[in-house]
Length: 394
Picture 1 (spheres, helix red, strand yellow):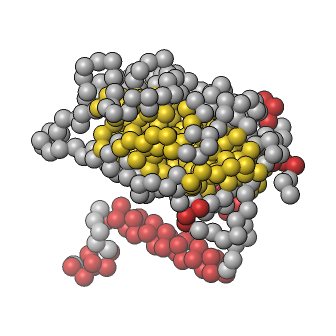
Picture 2 (cartoon, one colour):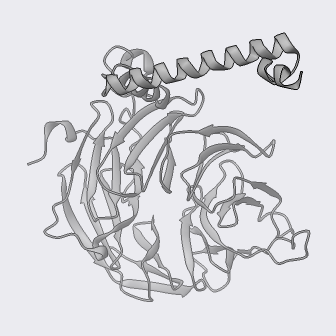
Picture 3 (cartoon, rainbow, N blue to C red):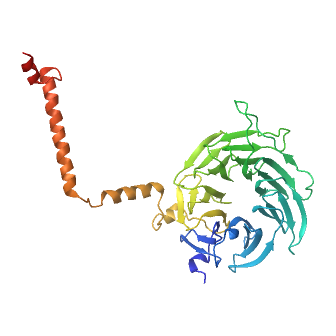
């Protein structure tokens, strides 16, 4: 039976172990929404997307090329689609005009109707790491991967890509920069596309210009960027890498605006709330965190017991109550509070082996007294030689 705390969850999270979790961020409770007889790698939840605009159903993309539909209202799985085709796990999942769009690692993009029949398919290249649908033009898809640069496709006319990106120029040693697209997002209010790469660079492409190379490039840290999300402003993006470092990047200034602390493992997914200035992140450290984009404060931190791959946030429900309402009854602490609590814990612990500590203190005291006497002799005779040395010399 589903617990009462999870009947109104406002965040959905897919796990590496195959569990599908619902999180109530107001009551800070979580529960598993599915039951697994055994943990298998093939049941890993890799992708999620909403099945309708009302956000009453969600589609889960499993590693074994299976898409399941979960009803948020009835709290059960209602449908599943076998998307077998190509090779590799699914790398993209989207809905367009009632049809399901899927993409696997080998580069096969398929279109499935409501009767689970494949109506169209086309190839986008090998070694795909991410397929992303434009939220402003649902028929536009962006794909990219390892040695497979950014391409924009129109589902209604998939014979030829709408835009094909060109690799950046060689570095100062005239060495080629490898192509490695890991995540893609569309900037609101423009036709621009922002890409996070495995070469720790953030590229911005503008398909409306004749230039196929990035119109803007910002480097972040020294590790591959695995997750990318666009903030409410088109000039700001939130990125995360394989070392658990998460930051807010100002594209207009080409600089780091803020670095979020406390993440211990690789970040797998970052999502910004559609309405509120909140950003949620999850990864291999098994924690889900919610930060305020404006104040940069940690609003929520929950341990979910499994490695986390992806997350979705609901638009209507309250993700996190205002800090004024939660200031009296919140039981979540920021990283600074945790550090202060741990320091006080160590200071209040009882000392073990007091006798040994007393001996050590007496030894240190004797050594200090010996050094003081030696310094007095130096001041008296003006040298490091002792009085007995002068007597023997005479």
